[in-house]
Amino acid sequence: MIELLQEYWRPFLYSDGNHITGLAMTMWLLTASLCIGFVVSIPLSIARVSPNRWVRWPVQFYTYLFRGTPLYIQLLICYTGIYSLAAIRAQPVLDAFFRDAMNCTLLAFALNTCAYTTEIFAGAIRSMAHGEVEAAKAYGLSGWKLYAYVIMPSALRRSLPYYSNEVILMLHSTTVAFTATIPDILKVARDANSATFLTFQSFGIAALIYLTVTFALVGLFRLAERRWLAFLGPGH
Amino acid sequence: MFEDLLQTLGLGAFSLQGFGPLLLQGTWMTIKLSVLSLAVSVVLGLLGASAKLSSVALLRIPAQLYTTLIRGVPDLVLMLLIFYSLQTWLTSFTDYMEWEYIEINPFGAGVITLGFIYGAYFTETFRGAILAVHRGQLEAATAYGLTRRQRFRYVTFPQMMRFALPGIGNNWMVMLKATALVSIIGLADVVKAAQDAGKSTYQLFFFLVVAALIYLAITSASNFVLRRLETRYAAGVREAVR
Image (cartoon, rainbow over all chains, first blue to last red; front, side, top):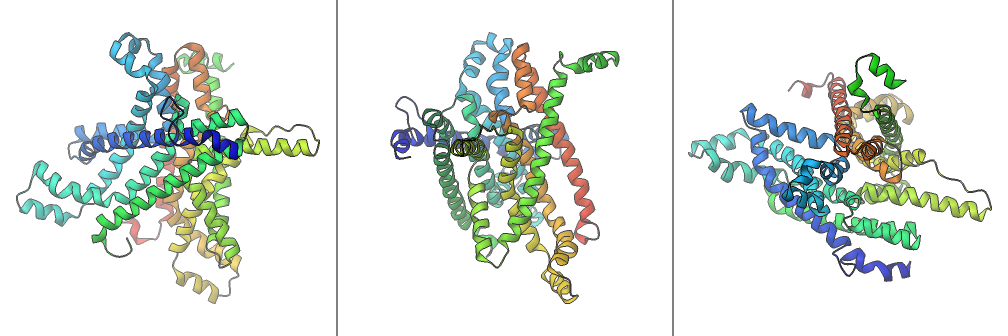
């Protein structure tokens, strides 16, 4: 156990000497996919609640597809499936993009989390208090100003508890990245396991690291909720 | 035979270049696995919820530890941890006892592992649902002289199901999608079948999309059933009209 830690603490945390690995890689996967997902999901969530069905339906179809299928299959399609198509390999740009495991993984993760985040934000927009929007309209706000100053600030705050759930789920989902040869925490644990045969200890260390990150994220979100959801009163 | 049957029915396109039966077997494996794991996790969830709500600290603390630890660690990590460790422990045990080498049946281990992991999520769901049942109901049941068992069977359980149903549905969906991971620990589920079929025909993309569509069909069907159940269990509740 001590030898295992001595040999593998560095790869478990940040580097195996040549590449970024372990915790650092997992955090990079998490933040990158969450950031892309967040930015894209804001316009999509507004489109999701649009009264125009030709705007609403494509977004609904996208979230239906990505929330109804496992992330693992989405990753397999992005990583091995798309690259097996001759048409993709014929295009130099697409060939270069899909040959890189990191690009494929981030694409699959971002698409997946974006679908869930879109539904969370759309739900929050839909549950806006009527009076709030009417008051904003009475003040002459309309179009993007209505969204930028009234609807989105309120909707994003109220979706914080659900969004924190999604962040934790995404952290747990990043574990499938090792199937696309990305050296995240679980990949290091598997390498340690096959080198030392200390199965329980290798995966146990990985589990402890994930547990720590989960608790840290939960704590951070609790602080954020205290700050931005204070207006919801005691008990929240 | 399956191939011929499809050809005679004029459904040649559905045989998927002869890999239809393989995919069908994989799908059946996925469904079997998720339904059995659901059963295990619901039982564990009910036990865990009762333990967590118990006044005995010796029951409450382990249950609290179970839900906190399991829900804080990714399911894939737990799956690998439990699945491989079970085998290692069993092997060292049989070595120690000088018995023959016993290999754990991967299907059984998969069911136990998934059931154990999602049992923690179900514990939280059921705990919340039991707490949501009005206290007066239990007091009335006690006043009528019902025993503990009767109180749970006839009063708490039917009422908590309504509160638990959205959570159960959610957990089921997450668990269903988590079954895609069992191919990593070597079970021949629909993902494994699609990968095998794709590799031998060089049409990986096509077969993976087929696997995704199979999952989509299962999740859509579950969604439909869950919505029906929710209206059923909400019968007689004013909230249902809204």
